[in-house]
Length: 241
Ligand code: ZN
Image 1 (spheres, rainbow, N blue to C red):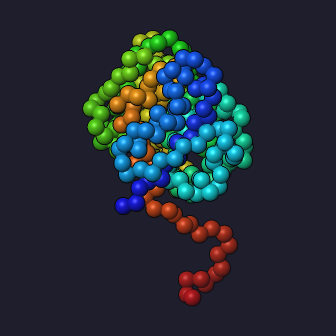
Image 2: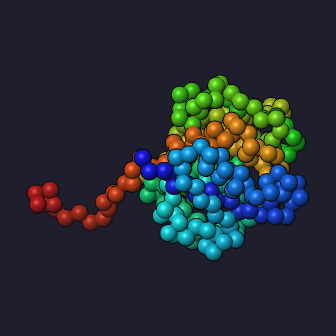
Image 3: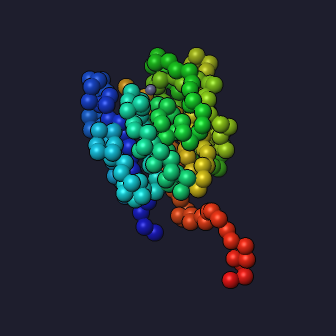
């Protein structure tokens, strides 16, 4: 089987401006996400960042991507409408999309959901418990019934998204808040997975369970094949030809 072609997209701004984040992710969040996928094998992994021409998301790059990972936060508005629209177009055509943490307020995810993507949040160094709510789902493979992250940002409901087609994880936090932290949707021929953890001031993407979820999610979101739907005007009698 040919390797899945993965593009890890990251806005790459906090890691160049915030000392704390630079220490945790000296090569950028995209490299921290890419490294364990490269080690796992079976993936051909490229990275792309906001300040590259066309944000590193040219039509050619998107066409050569089976699954796109997306991390963004402070520069969500700087992503061009045109590039965001092209990401959406590729998802409709079957490209998988794995949206991480604050990427839920990025343009592609909001366009695909049709909602604000809003939520409650608090930065208070709190433990996150992620409960597997859909045992047997491919994204939860190998995780047992829950796992924890020692310190993370809190996200709380309501999470303004359409009802997920599957909710694979629900997180709970010491303040009593809960959050649907692993959610699946399809749009057109493409699969979308949202995964909550990954605030930039915590070393979350080095966590083995988090890396496993991302690896599982990439495999789940990959297109089984490229659909070639036929649209448009359909002449009468075509079946007899
Ligand atoms: Zn955050």
